[in-house]
Image (cartoon, rainbow, N blue to C red; front, side, top):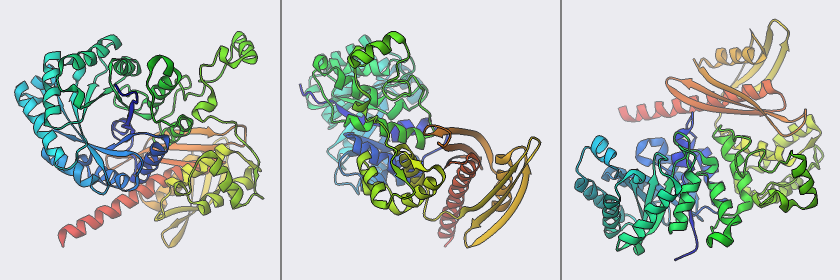
Length: 514
């Protein structure tokens, strides 16, 4: 039995389903680049038939990602499979992932068909997908609650039809580790053609056992694990990629398997996904939480001082958590900034040096010294901006007192600069009133968060907002040393996204009427 465990990342598909606002194509591509650098074997980029935006995202990722296999999801329906193939055909090689429900409750109450009909649908879907690619994955949705006889029949039929990866999902996070491992073990014992496919698992965390179930399946012979960064996903989330990767690395002697994951990329990828998805990581989260490598107990601290192995089974450096340098100032040139980015592991295709350097100089003038984590925050924020932003904040002045605040702004609106002033309950409220008046958008804020990026009183402030406009939710991010300015940038991020979407809709409407 092969000893490599294939890592299949579904952050951009299953993970994105759980977000309060959809990611843009640019944000998804940025995450895909990070997953490729992390060493992920297969990237499930989306569900192309679900929306034009998802189709475009999958197509864009398939065009640019070269070192990971790009995959798209489809139901066991011909139009879904056709859409998946159309979005992926720009890639040299790709995977189509098709699925159908197999548990009794799903077959009877959701599909309302006989089990023989469901098997026929699954077989037809696999054969359809094989017309486009020889890399076809088939999933038995809710396999964890499927009678084992039915599951064996479905798996055997799907392999005979041409599926070379069979996924066994614990879709609702119901099973226990020994139970789920037993299901996989029975498949190896009872399905005669099981050697012709790789067995994959996709576990949800409803009972907090997604990682344990996945590892039990690996010990039973599964050789692909489907996971997401930071465990993002439906309901309580998915199996956490970073936990699977570090379990396999740390317990390699016991498990006898390995992955292609570049472990020193874990911390950075986790931070990027957290920021772009506006999904904070709990402090006590395994591997990537803020407290994962902290030691407060006196006994633990004493042991750590004598030998780190006493209380650390892995090092912060093993996931890429390094000490942050602080030798960049406003006198540093582009070469120094690029050198730091090289040291951090970023390639030139992942950021615009001119744009990053301009933001760096502004920050250095305010802070004096700039940390590596500041550079990373600036890079992520710069990557959120679009070249065709219509609205830009040129000037901001704030006067704040105990009763009310007054804000004055100059806002670039295309070719025209407009001025406005407003009073509000606070400086951010006054600023938002100015922006609303100048842009004319009727926006409802669902969520507003401020977090510190960096350390100390001169750290950057990041504003994250979720805004509702005409029933659609948008995520906006702003970054600045001044939290009022960061809040304004977050709102303008949203408004520029809305303005861009409106323009695209107008173009489509005009085209349709011609």
